Image (cartoon, rainbow, N blue to C red; front, side, top):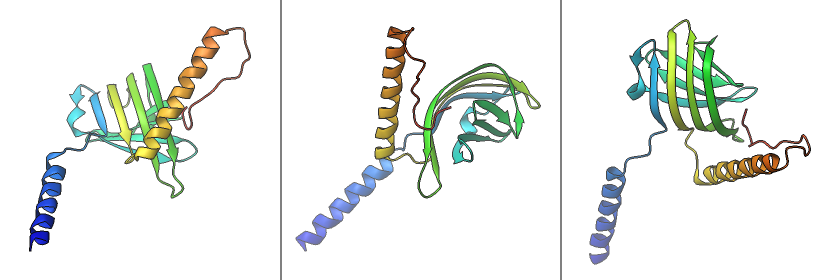
Length: 163
């Protein structure tokens, strides 16, 4: 009987902890499409074609960052600003994950699209997060070495999967 009570208390505690913990959002920041703030209605979905990409799905349509370009509902946007820092990969099962930041001010068919986003999409595992962190550190170190030796070789490093 004691074992059953203890087991029940453990299960209750686990349920309480899991319900009180809120998962970190996969997308934070601001996004405005033609003057409409859609920041609270965004979802991100990574994918893989020739390159890893990320879709930001909103009620106003789908914004995609792929191959160093931003598009809205399939139309490439003209951007006055498109700052990005990201990394991602394709898993053996064909799914993808994407983590990074996008800051942009663009125009196209929907009007002005302005955003400053921080994304972690695709249910990134702890192991994948560690790989992304390692790749980011390696890229930063390579940039430091290149800055310290500007007349050095033309070789450059890049984080896995980044554009």
